[in-house]
Amino acid sequence: MNSFLNLKKKFNCFKIAFLTFALHTFTCQSQQNMITPPYLQKGDTVALLATARKNIDDNLKPTIDLLHSWGLEAVVGSTIGLDYHQLAGTDEQRAADFQKQMDNPNIKAIWCVRGGYGTVRMLDLLDFTKFKQHPKWVIGFSDVTVLHNHLNTMGFKSLHAIMPVTVPRATPEAVSSLKASLFGEPVSYSIAPDQMNRFGKATGELVGGNLSILYSLLGSPSAIDCKDKILFIEDLDEYLYHIDRMMMNLRRNGCIENLKGIVIGGMTKMKDNEVPWGKNALEIIDDVTKKYNIPVIFNFPAGHIRDNRTLIMGNTVTIDVNASGSTLTFQK
Image (cartoon, one colour):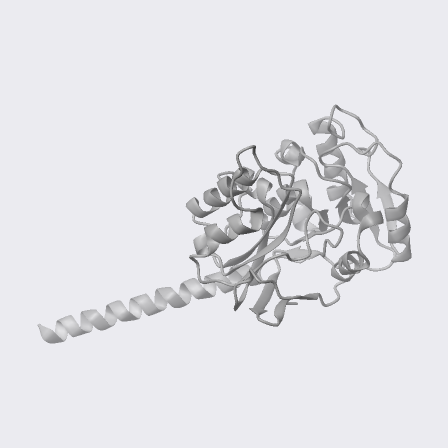
């Protein structure tokens, strides 16, 4: 009987070890299998279009000049100039423009001109069949987080970066980081120390974007899987209690407890009520996440700020946070 029990115990140990190894292997493979769209080369064409708020101003020349200086061509989509209340045309018009640029083999990247709200309204009208066969870079931030997250669930990388309307006021570092990312050059960032940082080192797939958008996508087919990932978040013009609400929702959905690390970008132009919430946005995030033993970078240069550095969403990154500062390095 003792021999049988010992044999059974050894079998159970072997089974646990095998399942642990299989789970680790699957996780690594899922990170390695994220598809990288082809990097750009001189002579390639980038489409400029609107997926959300309208862009009726004649403001794209600085962006077109920038693309030309990089040796690239620009095509202006049919949504530029459309005026449908707040939006750049109807949902169908915005989806049709995006679809056209996705399906055009001569377009190597799609650069969303601005954020606002509305990308999610056209998302389910899109057919990604040809995109899966011939992927291309989708670029933008803020409301474009809808596309970053949806593409992530499909297994494709994308670029969280400055947009055409922000090019004139973007820092040189923000602009050069986009060029480096598009052309496949090595990308890494060294950030000054922040007193709120939590030390540690972690490697994982980078996911996330605008906190309000992440929150709004929870429970939908476009919601990201947070397990073993490094989460980036930023936001603009939100009430402080709403930041707390969204962070609590991420935690209650099991996202935060499964992360390997967190990168917090700009929390810009936050608002408070007549009766103060009692904490600022960074303190709220710190309060919700401090129980987890993972590295956290505060005040990372990305989001609704001039120094909006490019983040390759879906790419494996290593973050190292210590007393001398923080580094974020993208693996090739």
